[in-house]
Amino acid sequence: MTSPPRRKTLFVPGPTEVRDEVLAEMARPMIAHRHADFTALCRDVFPRLPRLFGTAKSRVMVATGSATGLMEAALRNTVKKRVLCLANGAFGERWHEIAKANGVPCGSLSAEWGRAIRGEAVKKALDAGDYDAVTLVHNETSTGLMNPLAEIAAVVRERPDTLLLVDTVSSLGGVAVDVDRHGIDVCLAGVQKAMALPPGLVLFSVSDRAFARAETVPHRGYFLDFLDYRKFHDQFSTPQTPAVSIFYALRTQLDRIEREGLEARFARHREMARLVRAFAAERFALFAEKGFESETVTCVSSAGGLDFAALSSFLAERGMAVAGGYGKLKDKTFRIAHMGDLVPEEIRALLSAIDEFAPATGRGS
Image 1 (cartoon, rainbow, N blue to C red):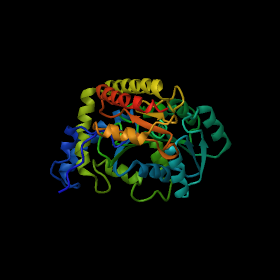
Image 2: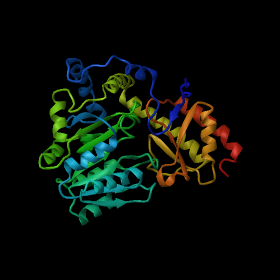
Image 3: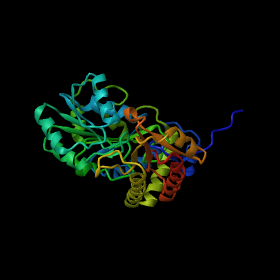
Image 4: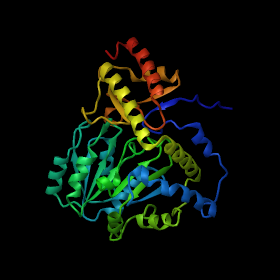
């Protein structure tokens, strides 16, 4: 019989560390998703989600699957003319690729990886094209950069017929998103990052404007039709068979988040980010543009010759895991996630271990 793999504390940008209390919830007996037991579970969970998104206006719904599916659904449900995809990392580029794969008319506003997309550039792009939607990745895990959501949202709000679609996959639950304040029409997030849950559920808010647009779109798709989700959500259910076990975990994690308090949770993320950035700036270099560094994941430049494979093996022996570079940054960076339910003491232990390893390699020289 094969022995289970040694457990590691995950300092990677998803799936993140899941606490035992949350994992244990998934061992509950299965229930039928069309019976009263699941309705009761949804009645507990659904009303507690809007506060995470900072909304009192939009519906916040739950789907089973990957956030990539919701990126596709947002485009299929809301774009009638043309969408402007903002891209300065792998996931911004992914949204553009999804648009092209679905035959959705699209344009792209690109910035160098690691550089923020600014509101003025968005304004110029919108002025130059007939767009009725804009996509934005709030927090780029590929580069460790957090785009200026407020600045970009203010530009989009100047155009009442243009919807704002935002990927908060690696920021929701770690930083304030403020859907209502920013006028976000579709906001989506997986649960396996700052929410610190096993992968398998997607949380997403949809504004009344976005629902109204969807009502005029003839081919919204079947699996993630926003109008279908609205109907079932209002009945405390889901259109298709949900990942019931993760719903239990979500309920428990909401309890834990509420006990901590959102402001305290956000402050903990800021402190962990501060620790990692200070360490990485002193010993290596930060990849993201100064002033736009992510609060949930730090992308560290290893261009000086750090042997990431050796570092990874060294950390694995100590029960820890960090992430390598993503996409075209694979051999140029590595990433340290500081999100979810991790605490500063765990971050300090990781940094101490990296510091123990680094002198043996001449700190990457």
